[in-house]
Length: 508
Image (cartoon, rainbow, N blue to C red; front, side):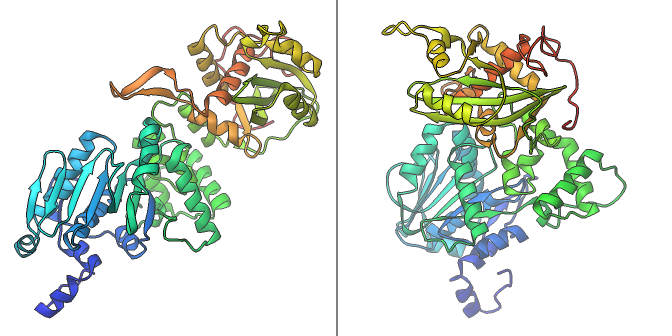
């Protein structure tokens, strides 16, 4: 694609090849603010060779996919008549930046012969350019109506996390607006294990592992981990911490990923700067990209530490220790149950269950069928409230099914309860298989986003993650008030707020 044509005939042939045009015709402003010709990196070249009709790109840092796709969008409308390309950005500021520095600039720097052939007709302040061939390209923050042949959604992960309604509009309105035979490109870094982007990546990963033959309306996943790129290695002196050496050993054992010493040293150096953002910016495998503290998350930082000490693993039930359950009871929505054992200084979260639309009889059956030896069942404060119609509380109803609940005052101090969860997470070990659904809810639990003021509100967002998180908060408050011990009775280890101990670093 980079070979220069020597004759007019060769140039005419090259101009018919969109890959050659993208690699040779356009100019950009690089990361240093300098004007330069756009030249494909190896990862971008590989992507161009493997483009599908519907593409989802899980990005690592500084791979240049946004620039590449925007140039592809501009190229598409310049070399197709009556075509329309739409670029949806995360914010108005980013939409303006894409329009000015990538799309508009790239057109202005094209050879004069091409600009004379496809003349610019209009260029609006709202981020739209139209051309003499009847085509147009627009950069916006929403694109529900109207058909197009080329759609690029930039940073879809943050859109899903901060504006679920906008994400739904894109999926239900913008995706179907792409004309049959057109192209869709959805690219983003990860932002929490929820929402459309996360699900699209997981579906694409499953299709890739199954080597599924995709239909033209199915999304193909493109992911380039940092260790596959030759520039991410360094030589010289440096110390790789034992923690990271264990991380690389785990990569090899679990994922089959082998990193050279030069790659490991580069990773260690980068982690000093990026810290908790390393997994999002430079993921080693696709699932790891979502193991990050998303913006607004209540427990993201704690889960990063938990994953780093391998706190998600096989956690067996120990018959000599009783099990505590912690509940959030719904009527028309979810009921969630955590199953926990206290063993020495460890909080072993061995199981989790949730369902909706069922009565207490169903959940009592689930609890009893588990076969655990129970110490106490903790419910939220309102479990003791008596129903207006019957005068019977859910505590009384549950007792009839063999469940003796203890009401926990979770309504007294919501911020204090959230802080109690943060504190006990340092001592928790989650069973990898049995607690996955609830664990992802805890990771996703976050503040509500204020679209008007562009900031996070002070209270939680009520969504799919709320009920599991409320149930776990019930356990944390019970623990902090001394209702849990390692022998099924007496005072908790850190009752009265003494949460200063360090995590043990391994299961007993």
